[in-house]
Each structure stands twice: as structure tokens, then as C-alpha cells.
Length: 98
Image (cartoon, rainbow, N blue to C red; front, side, top):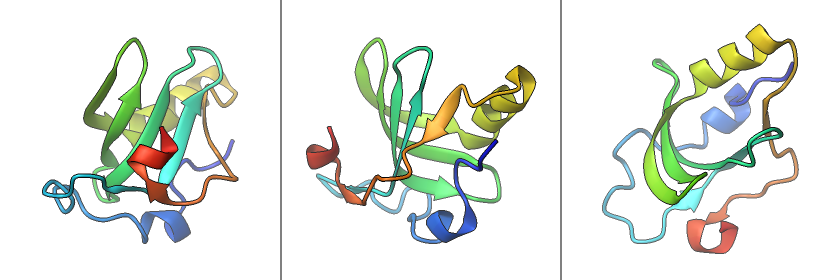
């Protein structure tokens, strides 16, 4: 199973609350669920806690916090990547990543 936020990506993501005044922050990573069709566009991240913030597309589209650590734990508990990182995603403003 692969890391959802490897160091080389995590180092490029602003800290939590760093982009809260931006109208269209940069999505630095795209995560998605192969089972539920959910997508997470990561705009902020705290590597210490594993907490991230960004645009979440699931039942609805909304901004919110989510735990990268919990996602990785879910993957480990299932024995496969329920949630994956888009390896081909390039950072772009969230408006373009939608």
C-alpha cells in the first residue's frame, strides 16, 4: 500500500489555516476512493497530526477537515487501497481541479 501523503508532497502543502483567506487555494494532492466515489482535494496539511483540509466531494461538495492517518489505517485494515492518491495529479487551483 502506498503513502497518501509522502514527504515530498507533504512538504509542498501549506500548514492548516494558511490558505483560509484565499478565494481559490491550490490543491496540492488529489485522493479518491475506489469504492465510494469520494474525492478529497488537499489544500492544507499538518504532518504531525495527519490532519488535512480541502474540498471534499462525496454526497455533497464541501470544504472540510479529514484525517490522512485514518484513511491510511482504513487501507491497512482492508488490505488494499480503498483510498488512493492520484499519482498524475499536478497542483492547480481548486477551481480547475473540480
